[in-house]
Length: 165
Ligand SMILES: [Zn+2]
Image 1 (spheres, rainbow, N blue to C red):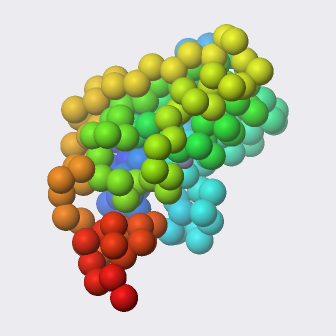
Image 2: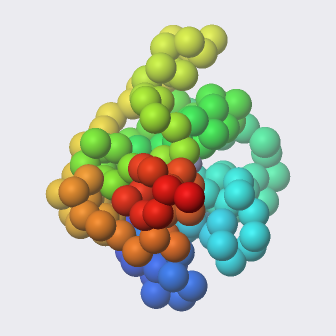
C-alpha cells in the first residue's frame, strides 16, 4: 500500500491527476502498477487499477491474474471492481473508503465494492478496506471540503455547490 501511495503522489505531481495509485501483486511479486492517467491519456478507463492490470498483462502476457492481490489507495469503482473479477484477482485491498473522501471521486451514488463481489461467480474473492486508511484519505479532498469546481466535473452543478443553470 505504501507503494500505491507513492504512485498516487507521483502521478499527481506529474500531471495533476487525482492521486490514485494501484499495485498488483502475485506470489509476492509486483506484476503491475500504475496511477490514474485518465486526463493524461484522454481515456476514461485509465483508472490506476486498470493501468496496473494493463501493465500486468503486458508483463505476464496473460489476460488473467488468478490469485493476485490488487492494492489501491481508494476504494475501487464499479469498473475496476468488475475488471478485477474478470481478471481473476483473488483479493482487493484498498485504503480510503468512499465515505472518507469527497463524492467527486465517484460516478455513482451508492455503489459498494462488495455489491459486485457478492454477485460474482466467485466465492474465493476477498475485499479488505481501510488499510492505511488515514494515509490514503489524506491524499484526497474530504467529504466536507470544497474542491475547485473544475475538479468536480463528474457532478451535476446542484451537487457540486456551483451555479445551477
Ligand atoms: Zn476505477
